[in-house]
Length: 356
Image (cartoon, rainbow, N blue to C red; front, side, top):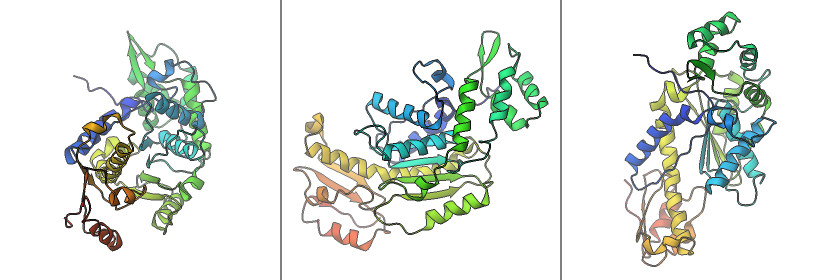
């Protein structure tokens, strides 16, 4: 029995298995958290090739705008965006455009921007993928099989890795094999991504935003060192932060090659958002912004990894809504001033257990 190959890059299904496992992991360790994850097919990929209205130019800026349009359609702005390779450039552009207000006044900045094995700078000649993709313009049809296509690409002088990558994008239609992406559009997207530079954004992230870069070991030393220095620098309250994690023994497809290691990196960082989400919901309920206030639990369990990080809910803690108890469970590593401030609130409705 044959084992199907991986889903085509640039398509939501390519990331779906990891996203599903991540959601299960988050729910298992924090059952009260409600995570909604949406995986997308970028323009010119998968099901998006048949969507009308995704007009050229097929560049990173318009691809990021597609994500914003989807958020508006779903009526929910994501707290976290994750992009791999080409998608890494897309989420960086999404973060930049959101901060600039390009998507309208209702835009909410993502709190975490995850960039998986994608450098923020421009690359001369793009990602080196355009030539392989461009060769598909003269591809004979129909395509007899994946093996035939792999041999065809290798005989043109491209490495086996490029052949495997393109072959993973084949889909069966009757007795024929077809590419699951639009060649012309995808070439434009990779060319645009290769020429896009987001070092300025990474050096000065918007306030309350974390840009989390997860990379493999085989990066350009200069780019790797530059990122490490940004992650280690002391930051002030006016800007966001940058973090860098390195996954060893992995190829470019980190979430396929080392999903457990990637999950170990992402899970605690995502958990750090959970407490803020609960506090924000409590605040909105108290303001009458939610119709289900009558059903609101009388106890808000906020599992916070960092006290008062990003959004500031100290006013809510000092004056909790009537019949609401805010229970904070903390580790021993909190700043002493935050601990003392919480202890001073014990006489109110805030419960502050000892460090665990």
